[in-house]
Image 1 (cartoon, rainbow, N blue to C red):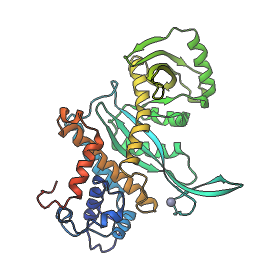
Image 2: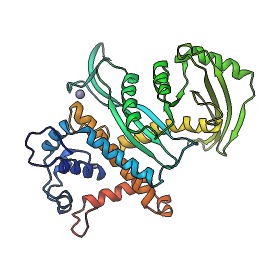
Image 3: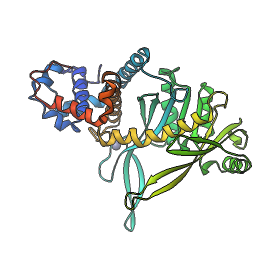
Image 4: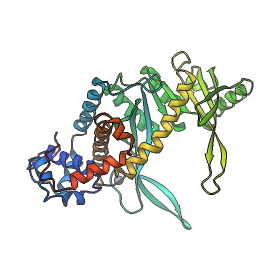
Length: 382
Ligand SMILES: [Zn+2]
């Protein structure tokens, strides 16, 4: 690993290693990391004294991002080779998702995006950061692959396209289909992926009104397929050959799922039926991926948005601004992706299923933190 310092007195790998430990222990800040300075375990593991918070911040401003990306790639390759990554719904899917990691009225950097926000009677300028992450969905767990910061003057789709271009280069055979939300219902994005031999599943919303109306009118005259998996009953329509998305220039398939689940109201204790409607548009033909699998994949994207990113933010301090600098923000995010992949791989592959079943992932994360926090004189380095 390397960074932009001319004559570094502390090797980049020591600084990087200390951030990996900080994240694994979920310390949450560079200052908390600095307070571990006296710990024999940490110094022994790093092979030298702990770098200061300021040094870590400065190194991360110019750290070689490609080196962190290749660490993530290395972990992916090992998991793949060890047959730890099974297919989900018959395919490997890449989820593309946007996330706002920071916003402030006061602090800004040269990479900050700006927007006008209504505040009281007037308007104020707010600074913020957004990124798009690429996450591989496999049968047992998700693997966080890469991230790209949204730049000034570009939208999320342009940012996602830049991200996909690199992911396609680094992981050309890792996935067959890209899952994205309605924001990515754009013919340029679809065409870009199709040109690279990848299919797309996208949430269908009113942004494509022509296609939506076309699909709805056809679904009215077709009987649904019934899929019952105990808790949820689904009426599903699945029709191919819609040509009303003219700018795409090829037919697409639309899947609609009307879902009813029984929920018990906490206040009254009464059971009620809750219905929700889901619609997806996809370039995947029915012969390749069946109706049930499309519904499963469509929900997987939603689960990732709601669970994986919430988990990153709530338990792993993903939104913490360790260093307000555009390159440092990407470097810390990539490092967290690596740490979470290692953690998930450890939980899923090294802990016996019967032990794993009785506890949440958070439980194991806490145990790990406790070990790393401890003085650790009796412990061997991991
Ligand atoms: Zn900024």
